[in-house]
Structures are given as structure tokens and as C-alpha cells.
Length: 236
Image (cartoon, rainbow, N blue to C red; front, side, top):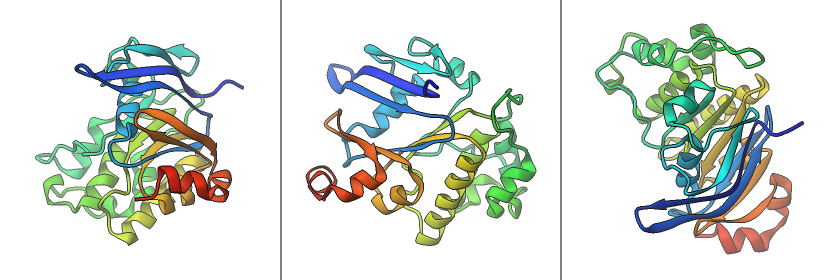
């Protein structure tokens, strides 16, 4: 079976600066894949290239059997590729419920369908704050809200940029449980992370990116067994 999402020979620039060099990756249906690497390695840029926010200068991205690397971000989102940016981008002047409703898209055949009830079960904190302005939420609650809003679009695959960054340990645990629940629903999850403990708790496979190039591709068990790779590319 072909992967849900794949990229080949992906190159990207910020202005004249060459950031991604022939990046290749894939994620299967119902699989959790993590992009690991130090700050500035190119993890976030990879996600932005996949969703079209940083248009690739070369290479191809295939999602659900269709090339999407020349589409606009809104066209990619409508095809069922969800994206939660690192800075969350919630609407602070709207309530929690209004933020969630902004993301609503029709159900898709063969793709997990999310209702408000399912989202409240996934993130119980949101169920208690539906009428609260999003500006009054904690950072962890805002992260939950950003993910819930994206899930309301019924994506086939969701891209999460640093979902555990800056969160309290108890919220990180809730976030890990939520990612595993998404996986159990059959959703593909591709996330960027610096927290190796969080990644090990949720991911099936890992790619390590350093200076815009993929330096490792394997299972989490293979990464755990390779001290040299972890020391060379992930040690601070």
C-alpha cells in the first residue's frame, strides 16, 4: 500500500538561503512519524514545505495519491492535510467553541470523523471552557485548542509542529495520550519534536534532520539502540 503522505528530493529556500536539501520522508495511514533535530535543523521548514507555506523549489509531495507540491496551502488543507503551527495561531478574540467551529469541514470517506463530543473526550479541558475567550487560556490549553480546531476539519493526516514545546509535564502527558488516540482512530500523524522522551512515547518511526538533510531514518527502537546517532545529531 502506498504511503498516505510522501516527499522526495524536497528542496526549499528562505529568500536566497537554501534550507532543505533533498529531504525524503513518508508516513503511512495510521502511523505516527516524528522529525527530530536540534533548533534550526529544518524540521519546521519541512512541515511548512509539505503544507505549502514554504513552496518547495524542487522535489515532489504526494498526499493520498495526488501531487500537492504546486498547490496553495488552502487547497492542500481542503484535501485533508491538517497543520498545527508551532505558534498555534488561535483566534484570541473568539471563544473556545468558536475557534473549533472555524475549522469545520465535511466528513471524508475512509477518514476518521471528528465531532465536538469526540474532541471534548480527547481534550477534556476544552469541554470545561467552551464559552471562555481563547485569550484567557493557558499555553497548554491553547495547544489543545489548535489541534482540536484542525481535527474538526476531518484530516486524513495531521502535521504537528513542536506540540510539546513549553508545556508543563502533566500537559505533555495529556498531549501524548491524545496523539496515541488519534493514531487509534486511524489518523496519520507527522510531528516535529525536540523532546526525545515525548517522541519515544508516541512515534513508530523517526527521521533526524540536521542542517536541512535527513541523517537518520528508522524505527524508534532502532534509534533507541543507536547511541552514536543520538549523540551525533540530538545531544545538546
